Picture 1 (cartoon, rainbow, N blue to C red):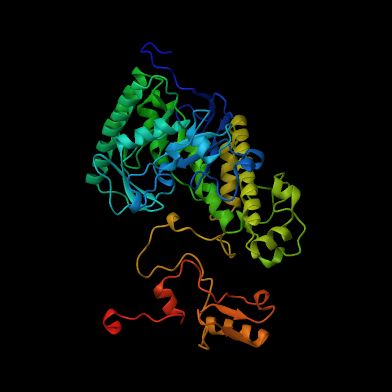
Picture 2 (tube, rainbow, N blue to C red):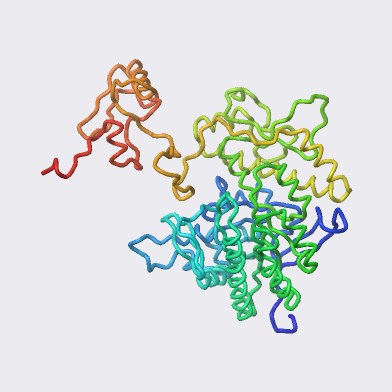
Length: 508
């Protein structure tokens, strides 16, 4: 216990080695009582509504090579308009271990939990933030979360690591100097309130990772000065930094030596392993990687290794393999050679390709398991190169040997859910393909689909309700169902020929 009576956090971080004297890539070890030890550099899994996509919690424990997960409060606090005063279910969850976040999500107790306010990457809010809090994107729309509400949520859910609120725009373009200054001032006010409330609960062992904003150092130096002062006076209060811009690491490390020894969690969302290597060279410790699940959704089996394999060919190697391609339909090879993950040691490419074409969920599950294993091997090799002093040379070889981008993937992705996306306007394409089409003899792809069915079946009958009644065996032949799905609205029905919109004056 410290001299002020405040219990130190259960987290410890030890720097084992730095590549250069001042800053740069480094080796470390992050540990929590009762959790898996994390050797850094490393990565944590990203969740959707508390679950790593496509993988059940028991398989996270058995097959995923991840020691921690990042969760977003906005995933759990939706409030339907008819029940605005109702408390979200996550706050009512019984928790014998005093870890409601783990109990509600069924996340294994050995996994470190990180709780932030927004998803990564987050959806830009049209409402904007205020002096009292931020706007979050829930499954029922945008809603405001005050600093007090967020603090109460953190203390109730009791994650291992908590990221205080930061005034962010979540837009691709850089904020103006006036907006950047406001971001720093608001975040400074909020972190001051955070530390004040944290002192009141002396039994709390939640590790605070304070945000470092994605604005220039000159705009936020006063805020960083406060963090340094808090760290100097009460070392147990500030446990780490949540960095939104890796290029700020050299400035922070050189100006504030007491902050340089803290673990750094990257909220930068790098899109390729090349960007990961660059950020490691700047001194980043723990990563959150959206491209991992994006690749799995696209049917891509990641295939890169560190260092790259030796070859006399000058051709660039792909970072991943499109497993939905028909070229794999008779291949009995593993997803990638020398991979020891569950997917590669138990199944082969032809089976995974079949699952993806049949839209079986197991296909994406196997890819998710494999891709996590590839990233785990990638980071393990990076740590080994940092230990023996060969990191810079191997990183240079990697950049020269692999393509700069991960393949897009030509297969059909899993069904998208509306709360994952932000509408881009009236001309936006729908995320999911229609599950039914117009029953007419019109030209185009829809008409061609109908003609193919008619040729094979000979006759289709449409009952009075608009549902399709087909002859025997037609359900195994139809390529496009003709029945509207549950997401169809009046406009969709009219466009597909199932209904006609009648104006109010015509009814009269």
